[in-house]
Amino acid sequence: MRILAIESSCDETAAAVVDMGPSYRRILSNVVASQVDTHALYGGVVPEIASRAHIEAISMITRQAQSEAGLSLKDLDAVAVTHTPGLIGCLLVGVSFAKALAFSAGLPLIPVDHIKAHAAAAYLSHPHLEAPFSALVVSGGHTSIYRVPTPSTFVEIGGTRDDAAGEAFDKVGRIMGLPYPGGAAMDALAAEGYALLETGDLKKIPLPSPALRDCFDFSFSGLKTACVNYMHNYRQIHGLDKIDPIPHEEKVRVAVSFTDAAINGICKTIRNVLQYTHEKTLVLAGGVAANSHLRKAVLSTAEKHSAALYTPSIQLCGDNGAMVGAQAYFEYLAGVQAGTGLNAFASGEAATICPAL
Ligand code: KG4
Ligand code: ZN
Image (cartoon, rainbow, N blue to C red; front, side):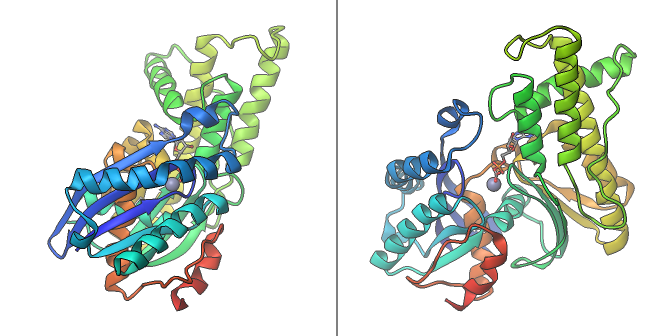
């Protein structure tokens, strides 16, 4: 089944063509236009600017995805689009565009939940992955744990009560003067920090764990605030002004301390989830799943519980259209389709009213 999939929930305008079937999962094209440089100026995504940028890019990106796949509209079997959760103005651009495209081409329209799509990216990197599995989706906007008994059924069993993991990475990076989004730069700094920890040349800052007790929920705001306070104190003690650069060694110490606290909290919760669910298959997905230290630590946690870990390739961890197409295939098989009445929903809960459309 050849699906043209569109993603515009945050700051990436993306379109892809995937070819999915019972025994194959192929990405025919996957085009992503990132707005990161535009938003870096403000240190975070500005919703109105993001929506406008989607409007400017969406036609061209969709056409490029079709042309790279070498397929015209008549060669396609369906159009899919992310309709929740995300920034409402951004989602509406993709949803309106996809509705018009599907309607004009007489193709079925498949609405896709962005978080499910992140997990579905793992199908594309691992052709043999099948539900049931447990999934942890860690991104800039979400940190949620699901049981996935069938590919289209996601039951949330835990999540963050405040900040998402990626949001915390970005905020801590920002306070150290790293460019937005800080996740990848924090990853590199933490690598230096882990090497120094091994040789005993660095001491970690004691930080609170994001894992909450007696549940599968997280709280990343305490961890984030502890890092922010540490940096403020450091500036005061060393007579540094707000704009004075932080010494590299101190950035390394904060990055590795934060990363380690985040990873230990995530792995502790994963251990509890695997013990509770007795699931032997685990998916780790979302933008933060690109973190090299997190990938290693979760793999070792899964192995200790004799569970197989499936993580999308690094290129498929961030927002993209192919992951939307992959999930759309399973939604279609489960009978999920929308008409021209399809709407966008900023928060995931509202999505439950959508299948009736
Ligand atoms: O999934 P995603 O592309 O967008 C959302 O749906 O939110 O995730 C973006 C997030 C950002 O917070 C970014 O800093 C983070 O993923 N990220 C990373 C890494 N690469 C991207 N966080 C930690 N380590 C990385 N290597
Ligand atoms: Zn995302």
